[in-house]
Length: 222
Image (cartoon, rainbow, N blue to C red; front, side, top):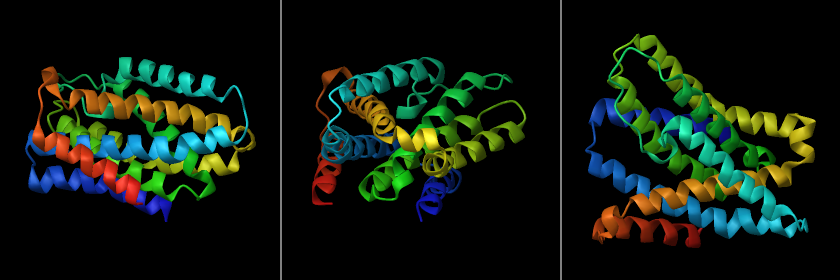
């Protein structure tokens, strides 16, 4: 179930770009909504769970997750939160490719126990606009289109791969709580950046604020 839904989220994001060609404003609203929902689920579900295990040093791993995502952002140029620039050359963005797939793999790790249903939907909602941004970016790639297709294919399977590996590799199972804490830090970084960027120049935007409130309320209701 998790694997199918995760794959479908990327396919859906790509299909929206190819067949509907949404405006940047719509993508920005979807990003705001997904960021609010992801942040809410992280704070309401993932944080309490990792702290409930009684590890007094768990906060260190959350901070480690924040730093990890900060490093990944340096190479991906912020693709995880929809902040990328158009590719204007034949050079394939290998740094973006590697960092984004590391991030996607990590996203799937907390889903390995098949009990984080709210988090699953938070990741799905987050991946749809990100897949839209990536698809829009790679459509304008001037190099071989096979590289762009391969990029999207691998990106689609990395989160399901993280879910599978998280339940089968003994190291990942043994230290699952610490790993979940790292991923919580990653989500915290991404979601807050999305929300900070949603209010450009600190100007109030009623549409983005509404998308944010809907995301928070949906998380609370679920």
